Image (tube, rainbow, N blue to C red; front, side, top):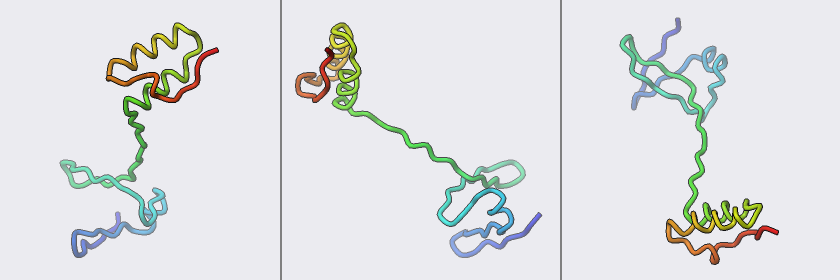
Length: 94
């Protein structure tokens, strides 16, 4: 067990031995979770999430089409969010 002081603005210094053991470096993100016995700090893992707008989704559907049937299905799906499939650049199936 190691001790730390709480500084101005609530800053807590994590002892060097623990930072090294858990790969926490300057700029690392950590989570702070309230537990019955105290506060649990853990290294955080951020996973980027890609959000596709309707045009990008349409482009993806139409570009991946292998057959004419896939193309029709993609065009039908694209028209649901009011996107004109002809206005979206994409590769045409052979």
